[in-house]
Each structure stands twice: as structure tokens, then as C-alpha cells.
Length: 207
Image 1: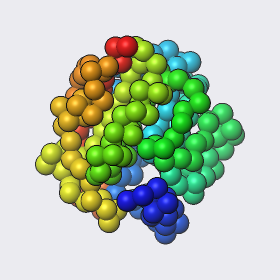
Image 2: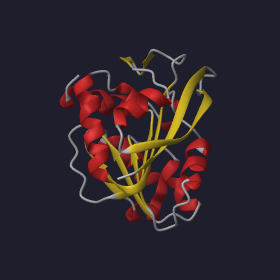
Image 3: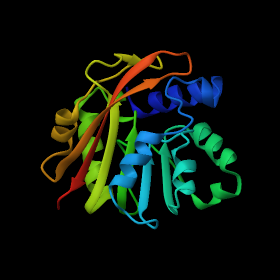
Image 4: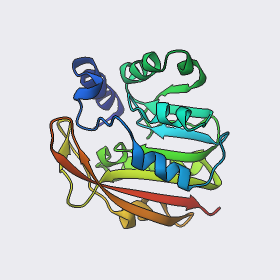
């Protein structure tokens, strides 16, 4: 799926569904927040949420005291939802409308967070482009947190095929510049009550 088709798909999703109607909705992104805290970065750390859309992680990070936040998503409508929800705090976020496979980061980050964006990249060229972007964006000693459907998780989401992963396949994608620090399993309950099996992997950049 090329970039314009991907963008059109996600704009349609957010145009036709409310924030709490999508399967990946979380009232409290506790696992993501725990893993970001586990990195030990300070309150002024630069954090980018890849595919953050209408996610409430940015709210939780502000509540936890973090101050330098960026959110990237293909869907301008999804980002507008978060911006409106945050009110005055929304002006303190860097909102980035972009496809991560073609994005050229303008700054370096201490923490790269991605919950459920990478698993939509089913083509090797897109995964390679993602890995190149991580290298450009994450500074040495920085941290990468990537959550995807686990090997026994769903095979499709939002009408699209996904590629399921474990920590080893995420590590192979990132390459030798990153070391695995920890991985966790997580059962996510969707708004409809279904259970989706996720894996979260946290890496540190070596050089």
C-alpha cells in the first residue's frame, strides 16, 4: 500500500469513527507510560509518539510531567481530535502529519514510541524505510519502544492485514545499533470486549 492510499484509509477511519470506537482505543495507556518511565529519561526528554493519532498517551505524558512532546500520524483528523481534547495544552505539542516511511525528522529524540503503527507495514521496503527513520530520529543512548500484535495476535486490523511480531523480529528490523532491554506481553481489551494479544519491546540505541 503506497503513502496516498494509506493516508486516505486512515483519514476515512477517523472521519467515520469516534475516538472510543476504534479497536485500539485505551482510556489509560498504562503499559506505554510504564515503559517510558522505565527508560529513566527526565521531564524535559524529547519524546515522539509514532502513529499517535487520537491516542491519550500525550495527555498521560503531560500529566506525568513530561514537557517536550511530538505526535506523528498520517491522519490530520486524528491529530485534530487530540489537539482539541488537550485544549490549551495542545499548543505545546509538535503535531506532525506524515508517513513514517517517508518522514525526514527535523530533530533528535530521546524516546521513540510506537503502539500499533509498525505492524501495518507488511512490505519489506516499508519496514526498511521505518528502520532508517528510527536511526535518523533517535539519538545515541536514546530509547525505542515498539508495540505490535504478538505472534498469536490478530492477523488483520481496521480492514488491513498486519504483520505480527516478537522482540526478536523487532530487533532484527532495528539492527545492531540497538539492544533489547525488555519485552512484555499485553492483552488489550477492545471497546467491544474482544481481547487482542500485543507485545511491547523496549530497546536502547548503542551508537
